[in-house]
Amino acid sequence: MATSAVSSGSGMNVADILNQNAAAANSSSGTSDTSGSSSSSGSSPSSTTDDIKGLNDTYNQFLLLLTKQLQNQDPLNPMDTAQFTNQLVQFSSVEQQINQNKRLDQLINLQSSTNTYAAANFLGKQVAVNSDQLSLKDGKASFQYTIENQAAKALLRITDAKGNLVAIQEANSGVGTYQVNWNGTDATGNQLPDGHYQVSVQYEDTNGKDYSAPITVYGTVDSADVKDGQVSINIGSVNYPVDQIEKIVQVPASTPSTPSTPSTSAAA
Image (cartoon, rainbow, N blue to C red; front, side, top):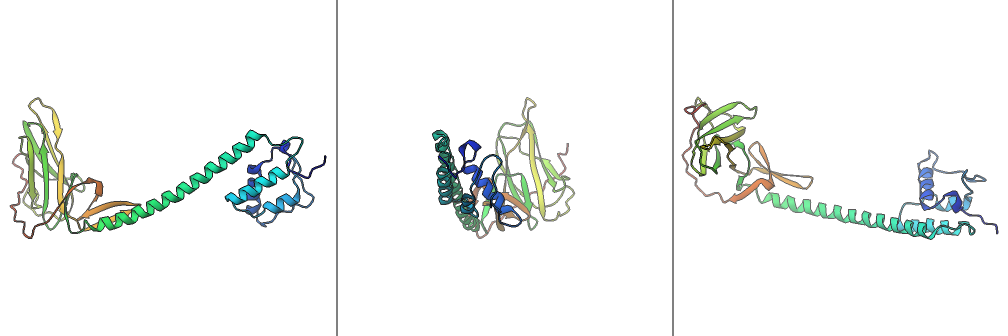
């Protein structure tokens, strides 16, 4: 029985047809001369090639290609049922993944828009941030540290953005949380410029074991950034991820305070 078909014995299947279609689409001429030509691994009728030329990889076009494969297979050597079923299952799985990715992109875009609106709520609010990065703003900075174990001695240090030590003083050694209002002066009493600083409190207990005290900095949010769906806030020149915010504090109309200046009296 004579057939004008893609022979399963040649190894041709839907994936092969898709590859042929992609190669034809990427050719410089954008056309394929199929008159009288045949594959080295088996014959492929020009009518089949013409039918699939220019098709995009969609579900309906896949079914068209699959139908062509079934119509043109060798009746004496038909496609294995397991292979045929596997092709259907694989395509269905890929299609589901593509749809899931589209839905995921939509959710990400929606979340990004939501985060943008949420970021606006931080503007002008005073926040407490779990960070040792300190923003000196208008010559003032506020932070607190927590001594979790009774200390034999403790030192508070402040360094500038380059890592230079600008202030040091003896810290409280008793267990508890302590507030510090820094007026932005260095160890010699000179006023430092506004900007990015780092604070640390190191202490050791009576057994000589060293600890680093957790630091929480306070400040008023100037602006917020949204990048790749992630929100961060800016206090002065310092940027903080929004997930480091511990609490939002309502700023009172008047907040009198007595600044404390780290000194060199306890320098090691």
